[in-house]
Structure formats: structure tokens, C-alpha cells
Length: 71
Image 1 (cartoon, helix red, strand yellow):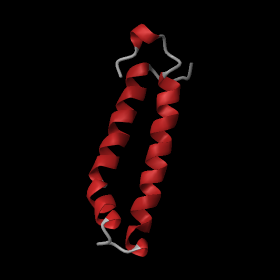
Image 2 (cartoon, rainbow, N blue to C red; image 1 turned 90 degrees about the horizontal axis):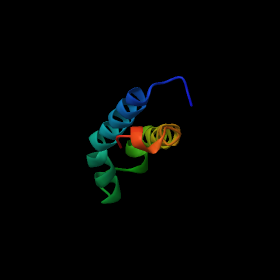
Image 3 (spheres, helix red, strand yellow; image 1 turned 60 degrees about the vertical axis):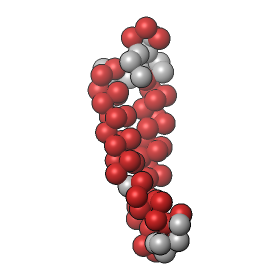
């Protein structure tokens, strides 16, 4: 297991998911054509990074025994 305690990993996941949720409006606007690729590019990069970080954190969390996981 990593150096981080389980609660820290869980907290980081929650924060990253909140960051993703905070940019959902821009993603929807882009999907509906209200934002150009250029206008959405920075947000898109951030969202891709946050999703990758969530995936890494969830993989790290999966290393803990099942009964100690909260998520």
C-alpha cells in the first residue's frame, strides 16, 4: 500500500469529483455547441487530468482490504 492513509485517498477522490462536477456546465455547453473547441480546450485538459487522477486514486484505494474501504 502507499504512504497515504485511506481517509486521505478518499478525501482526494471527493475533491477531484467535485472539481469535475464544477465544470460539468462548460462540458454541456461544449457538447451542445455553445462553446468552441478553443474556448473549451483548457477545461477539457483539466477534466482529463482530474479523471486520470481519480482513476489512480481509486486504484490505490482498491489496495486496502475490502472491509476498510468506505467508497
